Image (cartoon, rainbow, N blue to C red):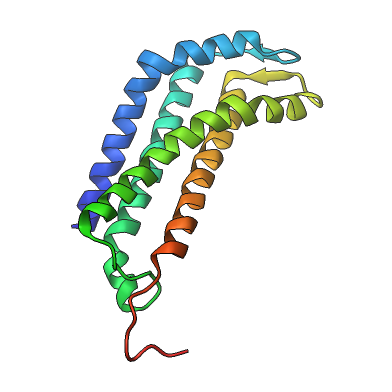
Length: 172
């Protein structure tokens, strides 16, 4: 069941990201490419754009699938005492999961908007000639790291506030 849920999450994340890139986000990326100062962009083939979009979609689908597997496997981890117990009500847990999942795109957008120009300036100082694929991979890495950082900060707060339910046989 977990494998089917992970595959479904991967497909949903990949396909929805692919369409979002094609329809909404790629024009903004193109504007950013043209506005990049100190960087000379080399476009070698139209295939580069499609390949970059597929890579971005695959990474987002993979991140979503890993999150689904981690959530679905929490029962085994609770039994091994590696995961916090579930003292919260089901609607509260559902809200926390929804907020955690929503933090990834928010963190990714903030990372792309705020951190990527700084990373681009630092990396472009040594080599100003970039391909579209290299530019997009650096932007993807910055966005994914920022999205995961936003989620991990939230997970840390939830884990510290959630606590474990008291048990009689807990060993120190």
